[in-house]
Image (cartoon, rainbow, N blue to C red; front, top):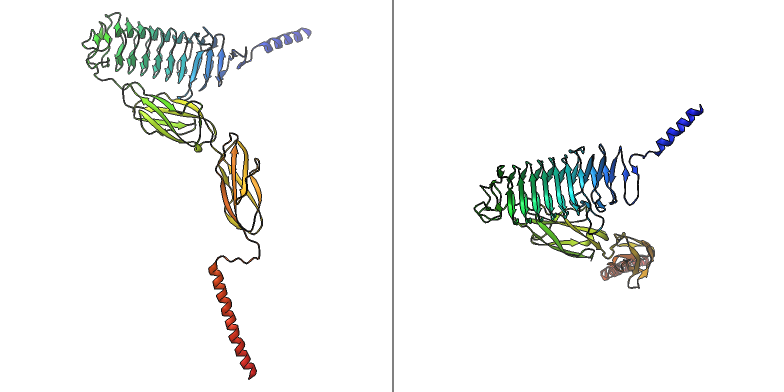
Length: 506
């Protein structure tokens, strides 16, 4: 019996020492979770100082607006599911912890759940290799893969879906494909020091992208029979498309090369150069509307204090099309409304339509196909308080009158009241006051002062005090009528009196 008791104690001790699934299991700074057997949700900003592992069959959800700060060379390894999905207004961000340093990468491994792994409306910046896909095929869409020190997206034996992203200012390559067949559609891939897209032993259809301003080659195909169609390929320093193994042809028809005359190099025109082994004819003489417009707010400035009616102004532009309209909204719960103008635009904002406090102003431009990135800035609304009297003008028969009021302001310092030409009286934060009325007409006033010193516009009503039983003559006409009636009655009385007297004498 004693042995059994000892064995039970040992088992219980070992069981209690195990980490509980889904609960915090590390240092606060690292925000490490031992989440075996659980779905973990990051709803607030995170700081990682060591590698973070999402185990097989586990899920990490990063909610909109969350920023994940990673220490130098720290990476996220995905053996299970990563869902980092922001919104156009509240993007998820993966960035460096300290200025000037680069973290590692987000690495999707072979066991990761391709169908459920998504990076959407996210920013991946200041990594070494932003996103690394090894025998894995996540969906990367509507995101910004920018300013990474080597490669924006690296694919090894991957069929990843890469759509509608901005892949820009990555040091060596925007996208590197090694034995992969990704979908690369509707992206802007630009401003690398070397290659926009580099493909080795890969097959991919690259369509409706803007591939421009790369320091060496827009698309480099190394033993890769690519399909490159309906792209804008221009301003790449050495070549628009270079085929390192011309025995495997690159089909690059129906592209715009930066000139209506077609590609240069082995092509007939003055646009971006092509090498041998590139089929370019037919080409597009005009660039496609592939790039979204851009939009900026010029006024007001960030954290400005606004009151009254304000003109919000800004600029919009589009490198390959025309701006059709600019839309503005106030606050995340507001509705998008069209501004006046396009390249130079104005939106009239009546600040009295929102409560005092901080509000985000959002703006975006539209070119008929694409919306620009949503831009926003925070402002503080500080209008004088609006005070409204609850009672209507009226006539009363008592000298005491209780006046009450309400306001839209949340920062009232005090209210003031007065009656018919008297001085203002501070009544604190009370929202009612008992007036003593004089006979006849009394004008009652109230106004508010907020904590910023703004004095609101006064509101007033007319209260007429009439004593009970007192005859009231409203006008001179009524007095005249009353006198006529009295004289008529006196006249009748005299006539009757004379008639009675004659009768009495008989």
